[in-house]
Image (cartoon, rainbow, N blue to C red):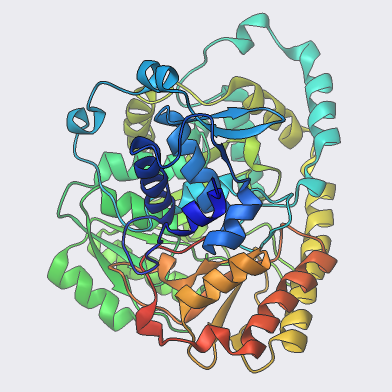
Length: 503
C-alpha cells in the first residue's frame, strides 16, 4: 500500500477554528476505523508528514499523541509508529464518554497555545522565536548546587515535608529583604509563594473575578492573562496601544463600568516591550486610589534591563494599598523552578492561600529552600549581570539581522529590556500564510492576534531573542527574510488570518 498517497488525501482546513492537530488526528482515525489503514501499518515519521501535509512538526506530534491516547496507534521505541492491532484497540479504547461527563469549559481558538509553546522542542531543526524562555545555556546550575550544599547544614528534616501554604517562611523573609532593596516594602505576611506567576494570576482571578465582572487590560497584553480572565467569564475593557496610558478613556471606564481589576505589565511589557513612564505610573496610582481600583502588577522582566534601570514599580508607588504585585524566578533563573511570588495586603494573601491550598497545598519545598539561600547569599547579583549582558547582545543581533534580511518588511522599536521584539509587518501580510511558510522553513514565532481579545486581527508578530545564540537568531531571521522576499507572505490580506496560529 502506498501510505504516502493514502495520507495525502487528508485535507487540513487552515481557515477552520478547529485546531489543525485535531483535524489531522480525526482524519487518520477515520482511515484506521474504516481499515484504509490496516493494523500493523507503519505511519510516516514526523518530518515526512510535515513536508507531505505542509503543517508544523508540533501539529504532527500532537496528532500522534492524541491517537495514541485513543489507543488507535502505538509507538515502538527505535522502530516507529504503527496502527494498533484490533485487540489492542479494543482493550485500550475508552468506553466511557468522557466529554459528556466533563463540566463546561472555556475554549477559544488560542486556548492551547501556551501549552503548545511550552511543549515545542527548541533543540531540533526548528529555530523557535516563539516561546519566551531563557536560554538553557544560562541556567545557573552551579549556583543552584552551591545553594543546596551551603544550606543543607541549617536544614531540619522536617523542612523537606509539608510547609505552610503561604510558602517557606525564611524565603518570605529573604524575598521581603530583596524587594525592599528594589523599593517595595513588604513583610512576610504580605507575601505568598506561588508555583510560578501564572499560578499567582490564576489565584487572583479565582479570588476576585465573577462572571460578567469588568476588568481592564492593555491591548495587546500577555496571552496567559487574556485566557485566565476570559475563562473566568470576565468582561474585558481594553486600553488601546499608544505611547502612554489614555487616562481619559481609563477614567471613563472607571466611572461607567466600575471595573474590579486592572491587569498591567508596566515594565518591558509582553509582547510590546514598552515601559510605562514614571509620570504615567504616578497618575495611574492617583486615579486608582480615587476610584479604589485594584491593580494587578505583573513584573517578570524588570531585572532584565539592558541600559538604564526602569522606573519604580507601581507597588513601590502604592499609596492606597490597592496594588497586587506578582513576579517570578522563571525569567531570571529558569522556568523549571516553578517559583513566583505575590505581594499584597495580608487579607488578600490569606484569601489567596485558601484558594491555593485547594490546588497544591504549597509550592515545591526544595525550590523554595534553594532560592532562599540564593537570596540570602546574594548569589543572583553576578548571574543577573551576566544575563543582562548576553541578552543585550542577542537583542542587538536580532535587530541587526532584521535590518539586513527583513528591511522594508518589519517596523519595530528596540526594547530596553525583556525578551521580545514586537514587529509590525509592512506591507500588511497574511498571518496564516507567513506562519505556514515559516513552519515549513523551520522557524516559529507568535502572531500578534494571540495578544488581543475578542479575536482582534493583527498585522504584528512577536519575536523572542532570549532562547537562542546570535548565530541561530540571525539564521531564523534570514529564513523569515527569504519568505518575505519571495512574496509568499502577501498571498492574502490580513482579514484571512486564521483564529488559531500554527506554532
